[in-house]
Amino acid sequence: MERALGVDWCIESDSFRFRILVKNMPVTRRGILSVVNSIYDPLGFLSPFILLAKTIVQDLCRMKLSWDDEIPEDIANRWFAWLSDLSRFASFSVKRCIKPKGFGPVASAQLHHFSDASEKGYGVVSYIRIKNSHSQVCCSFLLVKSRVTPLKPVTVPRLELTAATIAVKMDKLMKRELRMDLKESVLWTDSTTVLRYIHNDGTRFKTFVANRVSVIRENTRPAQWRYVKTSSNPADHASRGMRAEHFMKCQSWMEGPDFLAKDESHWPVLSEFSRNISDDDVEVKRKVTVNIVKAIN
Image 1 (cartoon, rainbow, N blue to C red):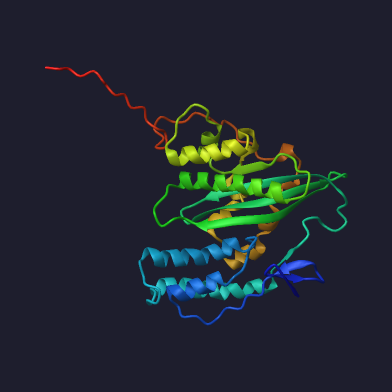
Image 2 (cartoon, rainbow, N blue to C red; image 1 turned 90 degrees about the vertical axis):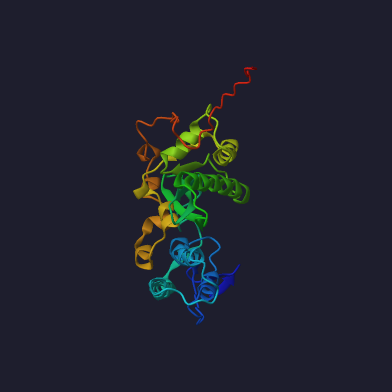
């Protein structure tokens, strides 16, 4: 085992592994945060699992407990269950190379970004889909950004749009850093509301939505955005979290959804999609008519 930029690298198998040593910390807000922050996962391999611990910390913040106060029993049980699951990742490994052995020269490569949000958190998971001269396809995990929702309440549509904006920024970053000839990226969301905002040309939105739609439209074309069902969206795990048992069995997390391994004709298509924004949408900026003519008595 060697250390590479803070990550354990097994030279023999050419894979990344996780060597997690948990210190005996008090079961307080300070102790829990210390343990969570001690897990170094720069690419976000374990994001769904770590999100569960972050939500515990956030719940303690929401209860306004001090750093060293005793925590409620129900939250303590959640924490002990999470710690118990942590040991399972001693056997978890990730292949370093995004191209399988014997795959041959890459004929084409394309980035796919999946975004999602929930009441717990929001996140983006990115994959690279490569194809060789024999039309064989391989999809590999690249990077995840996962965050808990703000303490100040934010609507899920706004969080979905925020996740979509992060996906655009990740796409821009990877295009700059990856030294590959890449096809036009594809960005996926399970929110039809976000798709309507992105495809809309005439409606004026409130500042929060308008700013994020502007970032998305400046860096991507609406045609690059596609709909994916929640059940097939790997970013759903990054926004809701996953227990270790489920995580270890979730093949789609590291390899992407099954449809990416197929021809584009088999990718999901949203039928009967209306791009019209409802007049009742709370994000639409209302037109205010001001009568400047006043009667003078």
